[in-house]
Figure 1: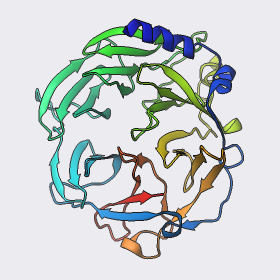
Figure 2 (figure 1 turned 60 degrees about the horizontal axis):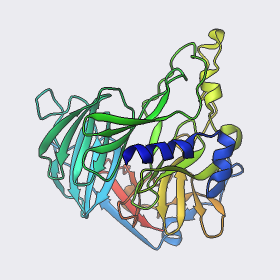
Figure 3 (figure 1 turned 90 degrees about the vertical axis):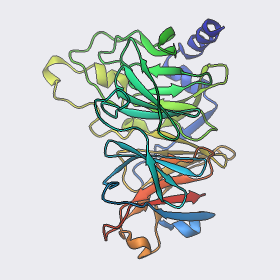
Length: 353
C-alpha cells in the first residue's frame, strides 16, 4: 500500500516548474510587494487579540536567542542556545527536553527538531535522531542509512518523509519514506542537472509549514508550496511568485568554474510559508526585515504588512516589528518574540489575527 501511495506521489510531482504552477490550487503573487513600502499598522488595530508572555529566566535558564517556538497544549517548547526548554502558558519555566552531551540519552548536537505525535524528534547528526517524550524522558534512538536535512512527520509511529540535500544537482532522490530506521521508498527529484563544479550546502533548505491545517512544506529553491495529504501524496498547493528575487536551481548548479565565489543567493529573497490561520496563508522571508505577507484564500488578494507595537510596551524597541515566524499547533496564534531594550526576559508575542 505504501508503494502505491509513493508511486502516486511521483506521478503528481514528476513535472516541470510551469506545470506545477498551473496545477497549484492558489496563485500567490507577491512580485510587487516584496520590496514595497507600506503604512505601518499598530498591532492592537490589526489583531483581534494580543498576548505578551515574558519568559521566566534564571541563572540556569538564560535565553540569548530563540531559534524555534512551538505552542502545544498550552505549553511552549523553546529551542535556544543548544537547549530545548518547556514553559507554561504564563511563561514559567518547567523543564528541559534532554540535554546536550555525549551520554547515551543526550543529544550530541541540535541540528533540527520536530514534534511527531507525543514524541519530540531531536536530530543530532545528519543521520541520527534522539526521541524524547513531552516530559523530556529519553525514549529511543533512530539511525538512518543516509544523511537527511529535514523531517516531515507522517501519521504512523516513527514514520517520516526525510528531505535529501541535492548538493551537486544530480542526486536522484528528493525524499525518502522512512519507517522506523528503514528506507522503504523514495520520491525522485523533479529535475536532475549535470554535476555542479562544487557543492553548495544550506542546512535549512526544507521548511515544513506549522499548525495543523496546511500540512505542507516549501524548499529554498522552489517557488511552490506543497501539501502532503493523509494518503501521503505530495501535491502542489500554491505557487508563490516573487519574480527575480526567487533563487533558482539553474543559478545554483550552473556556476561556472571561474565563478566559484559567486553566491546564487545574492540579491534573492526566498519565501517561507508559515501556515494557515483564518483562511489566510502567511509567509515571510528571512531576507526581508520588518515585513510579512498574507494571502486571502477567499478573495485571492495578497498583502504586505508592517506591524508595530504600542510605544514603550514591555520596553520593546521603537524599531521592533511583529513578524510571525511561528504558529500555534491549533492555528490559534501567530507568534513572534522580542528582546526588550532593558535586557529583561525575552517576550513572546501571540496574535490572533
